[in-house]
Image 1 (cartoon, rainbow, N blue to C red):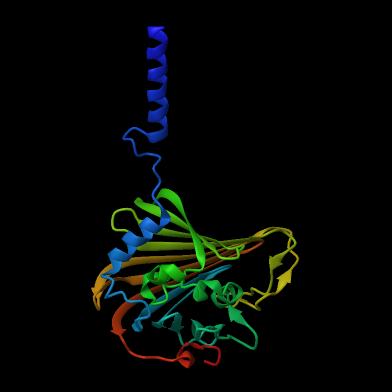
Image 2 (image 1 turned 90 degrees about the horizontal axis):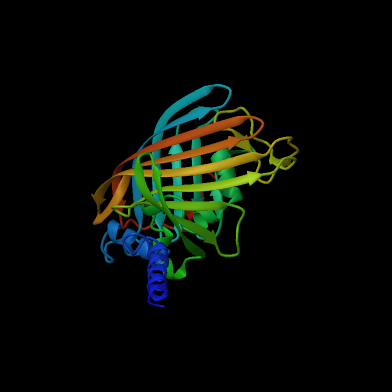
Length: 297
C-alpha cells in the first residue's frame, strides 16, 4: 500500500511537471494584451504617445520591382497621420510609376491611379483590404492611428502566437483577427527583448480558377480592384512591413527605416520592395481630411 501511494505521488508530480514545464512556467502563455502593454511602454510614456497626436515624417525611398526583369528607382517619401487618418506617399517622377500614394481620410481609403482605373499592386491590395488603414495597422508605431494606442476601441481579437526566430532574432507573434472576420491572415511580430513592433505580415490566397487578374508588366504591376480571372494555379499575395533603426523623436522611440515588401506568386511571380529612410519628424502640425484623400493627386 505504501508503495502504491509513493507511485501515485510520483505520477502526480511528473504530470504537474509536464503541464508546467521545467521551470514551472513553460506553458503559462502570456496574454496578447500583456505583450501589447509592454510594446506601448517601448514607444514612450502615456503622455508622449497620446493617441491622435499629429505627425509628419519625411525621407528618401528606394523601390525595386522584380518580375520577368528588374527595375529600380529612387525618390522621396512623406508619411503623415492624425488620429485615425493616415497616409503613405512616395514620389519617383517616372512616366510609368510617378507616385505611390495610399491614404485614409477617416471615411474612405484611397490610392492614386497610374492610369484611368488602374492602380499599382500595392494600391490595389490596400483598396481590396481597406482595414489595413481603417484599423490602424499599416505603418505600425509610425502612425498615430496605430491600433494599440487606442486598444480599448480596437476592432479586433488578439491571440498570442508564441515565439519565433526570424533572421536570427527572437520574436513574439500576435495574431490579429478583425472584428467580423476576414480572409486576410494578419500576424504582428514584436522583439522578444525590447517589445518593439518590428514586423507585420498580411497573407491572402486565392484558389485556382479564381486568381486575381489585371496585374500587368508595367513597373510595380498594375490591377483594377476587384477583377478576377480564371487561373490554373492558386495565387498567393503577401504584404510584409519591417521596422528598424529605432531612435527617439518627440518623446517617442520610433523606427527610422520602414520597408514594405509585396509579392504575388501564381502562374507568374512579381515582387516589389520599398525601403524608406526617414530623416525628419514633425509633430503637432494640424491637418484635415482633404490632406489624406490621395485619389485626386
